[in-house]
Image (tube, rainbow, N blue to C red; front, side, top):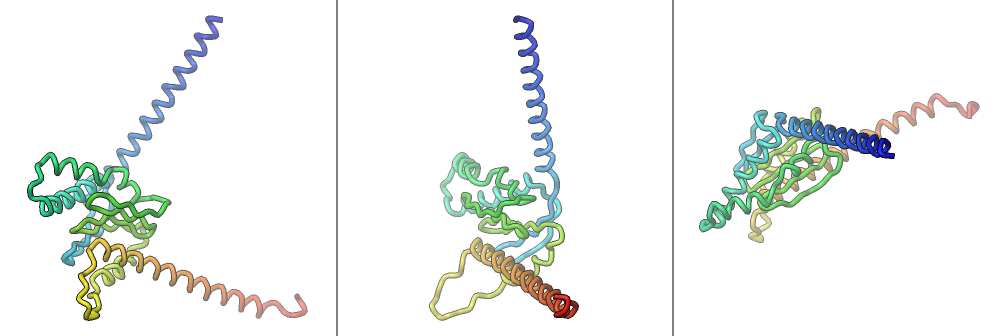
Length: 209
């Protein structure tokens, strides 16, 4: 009986070590992925746009947090360093950055001072000053129409309405770009379907039917 208990304990310890080893390996892989450089298209509020290849997801988190800190300093001049650290640390997290690359679900996450937009072909982190846009490989053609929509001047309707905040303008431009892409893809499928149907009708005679 004691021998069986010893064998059972040994087996349990082996399984526990195996689980710990797998968890450690997964953590190491996640850490490695966090530090891999990603291609980011940075668009500033004032209209500057340029490509960046020097940032990992962790670096991007730091960039966004610096943007948030600058906004807090302007909005709350009396904040202490401790206040700033607490406010910034309570906002964007590393787990939010993971949704930007390779995520299957589409989400919009509102964080203190920033918004995470994971929308499939276009993903971004948007702060008060910058939009950090990420596209999967092969979807670079979406960047130009996105820029055109983002920098399009609003129509003056004479009502004296305030300009839409930068974060909302980015969200609107991204959604319009994706909807347009979806519509173009759908129309292409419909045209190809019609061609195939016409070919079938031409090849299949009434006798064959």
